Amino acid sequence: MPEPAEKPTHFIHEIINADNAALKWGTWPDSGTPRVHTRFPPEPNGYLHIGHAKSICLNFGLAEQYAGKCNLRFDDTNPEKEEEEYVRSIIEDVRWLGFHWDGASKAAASAGGDPKAGVIFSSDYFEKMYEWAVRLIEKGKAYVCDLTAEQTREFRGTLTNPGRNSPFRDRPVAENLDLFARMARGEFADGSRTLRARIDMASPNLNLRDPVMYRIVHATHHNTGDKWCVYPMYDWAHGLEDSIEGITHSICTLEFENHRPLYDWFIDAINEGEPPDRRIHHPQQIEFARLELTHTLMSKRKLLELVKGGHVRGWDDPRMPTLSGLRRKGYPPEAIRNFAADIGVAKFNSTIDVVRLENAVREVLNKSAPRRMAVLRPLKLVITNYPEAGESLEAVNNPEDAAAGTRMVPFSRELYIEQEDFQETPPKGYFRLFPGNEVRLRYAYFVRCTGFIKDPETGAISEVHCTYDPATQGGDSPDGRKVKGTIHWVSAPDAIEAEVRLYDHLFTAEDPENVPAGGRYLDQLNPTSLVTLRGCKLEPSLATAACHRDEHGAIAPDRVQFERHGYFATDPDGTPGMPVFNRTVSLKDTWAKAQKKK
Ligand code: ATP
Ligand code: MG
Image (cartoon, rainbow, N blue to C red; front, top):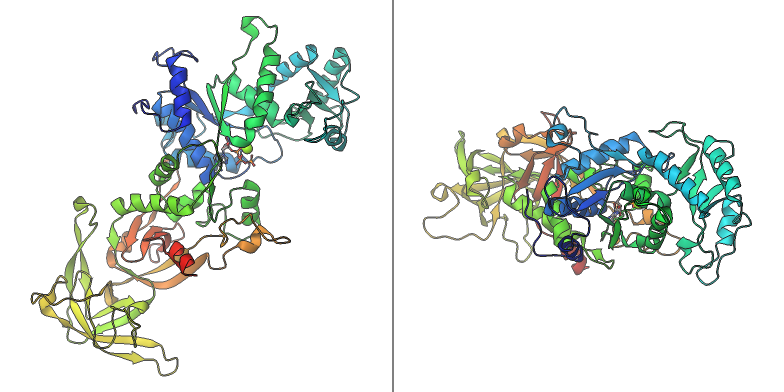
């Protein structure tokens, strides 16, 4: 059990610490610790993205820090947009991040258990919400309104003009009760009537101008089937869901700040004049700034468009900001948790440089990813004075982790090196191979370039020749001779073939939403966000690299560092004979550097 947060690192800690000191929400009966109960309430209408991860880490993190509870609640109040696929993926993502919701025992959450154990669906509360709506009608605080959607908008007024009362606002209670019951039974057409709260059409807060509580929808709901023909609006439902579950700190993003008076009004209206046993819990809403990232879109509607329009390969395309995409790209869940902790929680919106997320990934992988040699754009290097029989050389697995040990890598007369590691006429400051120059082959020998072969037709370099100095085995010269360049290599006869997918930002623009007039965010798509390389050569220890599944069925790639290239992860498209690697992240932030040069 993690220690309760003693030192507050953000304003929500401060609020909770003060609440706990005052025992504002009482104590848990079993442990006696002050009650902290949060929830993560996704709408199952898309895959979770990195923005959701911020909210997940916050809500589940607080429950861990304060020995409290966090619910996973699917906000399935909209029967038309929600799909089972999204429910499954959301459960997978929350577990992958390493969190457990209240009611999900760790045993049930692992192999074989019901993945939905302990999961809550808002639709389970429809009955209760309906009862409370009836209670508001009885108190004269809600009415059935026959205005069309368009009229309702018109009557609502604007920020500068008050709204006008609906002509149905003073309907007698008995008529409202009768009409609402018939709406629920399906006697009226979609859109013909609504149930509205009777608050104040002149309120400066537009959310309080008699908001709609229920609309008529004849649709089959994935959970309740055809039972209901009315469905609660988000603003009516959300606070009640939190109330039913006894949520103490109902944490949401800033755009709901001016909905809070409405949520408070609903609960106060339900409770008004009621005896204690009919009063309902009143949670405390706390707003925080949502995550925005450079070069990244997070609107679910737009992410769906990218998938449907074939601009990416699917929700889990490694270029997507979805958790399934980041997972496939090779992001470790701890990197996402570290990132969430690093960016903190604030009360004002700001855009975070995506490089901070990438740096969090680099930090985790630097410590954990074994180093391997891989040549992505191969060029043959022949060591003309090296014997026919090769040898095995020792290579360090991870200089950051002595416990990772070493491995043996085959070396031979014919190697592959990167095309860019040879230049016929070297530019200034080029320390790699060129005629006459000596470099170090990593973990092997010093070699000096003696010549090269050019394809007579294309003019491309097809082979580079060199000689080696046997006295430099291991990469050091006994006579103290220095070389400025060290390059990696793969033994040609031992190489494994692989496909390697290099990813770049999906959007070139820093803010893809900020498009010139007449343009669309789709115009900002980066045409080289994916570069696929085939015929890459890997050292043979990577022959067993594969993409596994974790105990929850989520993909669990092998993650390595290809020396000098970056961090890579196995993709499920790979086969035993032809592994596929995704570039998780480059070693350094080459993008920012390239941009600065421009
Ligand atoms: P929409 O409401 O447009 O479908 P949404 O992103 O708000 O999209 P929800 O399923 O309602 O989707 O989100 C679930 C939770 O995740 C909410 O509590 C919301 O506040 C939080 N959340 C969503 N996007 C972000 C973000 N970018 N940063 C932080 N939290 C977010
Ligand atoms: Mg939402």
